Image (cartoon, rainbow, N blue to C red):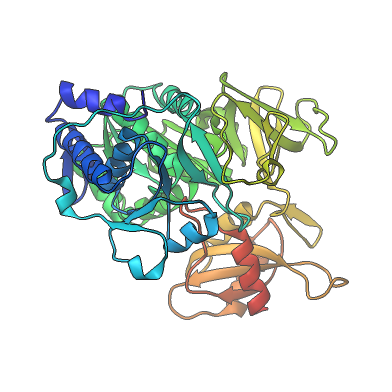
Length: 475
């Protein structure tokens, strides 16, 4: 078997049912199956087959998913790419890269340009199924530290992840799922394959305004989103309120969420909302309804029965409930370091994954994140997660987006909190600082710098190392 088999089976059951919907196109299950077989034929004619390693540089979600399924059909491992530079930095021996653009003159790796001709009708070809322990997908970690790690996911782990996502979301009945995540993230890809394997319909939007339009037009009843997409969607709803009476469940995660954001989701999107915790390395490992999170910033749910999460000290000794420490995770969905990477550098040790998060598990079982050890803002005697301060700063005059980091002028100088801001209209750092001094409670902001955009990864997470570099340059 492979991860796409149920998609092909659903095409036999419901060939006319929509599988993938974008604002400008609808792909039925029948069309998707024909596309998988047609693209598999093109790949086969190009000499690719079982064991090949193929980069996927295709941003159109429908084509991306069909291509990944076609690669699985021929037994090839797919590696999502955000840019051509990823292929060089990953250090993998690619057999080919599939892209929609003509980039052959920019790399020595063999490039196949995907276009409409790839979807010409072709005879069904026999599948080359993966063995359960074969790597079927290679994903890169979110890269918030500036150093993305490659994670190999075998077929067994992929199946466990799909079952976990389905269990997490099936507490209410839903049929139409909007995915507000970058298609190159394993979060988006895995949840899309879960929904398609269950015969549901998945929707993708280009931006918040289009997402709100599609939610109403198609009466979408479920959403899964990154924390950043959730912030943007709430802001759009506050700006232009719209009825979302069909929405039955809203799941989000991927980074630290404040109590204020959770409250806004329940107030302005749907009261039936859930947070979840997971990683590229381990998949979904904790989740729960916001209503049960007791108004705690950083709460990400209860540890799932198919996973184990421990809080340990710096000597790897487990800590009692309520004590803050380093998190480590173990589950049947655990990936493994790929591409010759040192397991320790990716946080893998003794059967556990150490994601770099600090937190606690309260006596009632709620997992609460404090942030990452290397991202905490410690200034003016205060200690806070940067997300808490950023949530407050987004209410500032003219602020559209913001990121906070630490700056030290010299090794002996006191550490300062510095904010990078994207603003509408005129930038007045003195006015912003006066407002922040009166309003922000997390930590004092020493200075503000204007930027064109906040650096973020494909899942919308702020790229903290890039923020630090910008602060160093600007200060």
